[in-house]
Image 1: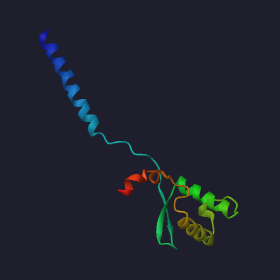
Image 2 (image 1 turned 45 degrees about the vertical axis):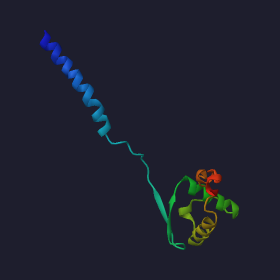
Image 3 (image 1 turned 120 degrees about the vertical axis):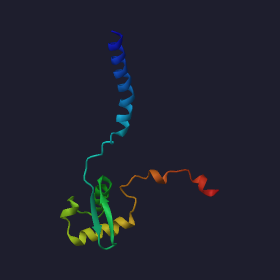
Image 4 (image 1 turned 90 degrees about the vertical axis):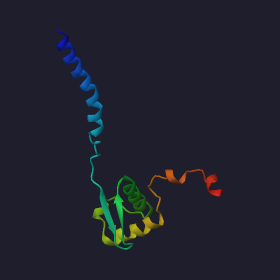
Length: 108
């Protein structure tokens, strides 16, 4: 009887030690999604097309009195105009959290 209890106790003890190690070794799940990069030939750079960029595209269309439509369906001249506008409005449609830090530290 003591042998059975000792065997069962050692199994539980082994499981208690192995489980945390196995959990640490498991890879973290990655976010599913597709990242779309758009090349700006006029400025020779790439832009990540995300919700922020889509919002900026909407602002551009509104400011230029254009009907809403997808960027991918725009004419080349309109895309070029957007990228020029976009480079002049770098932060439009983007998170400004980096700009709201305490500037008093910069004066030291």
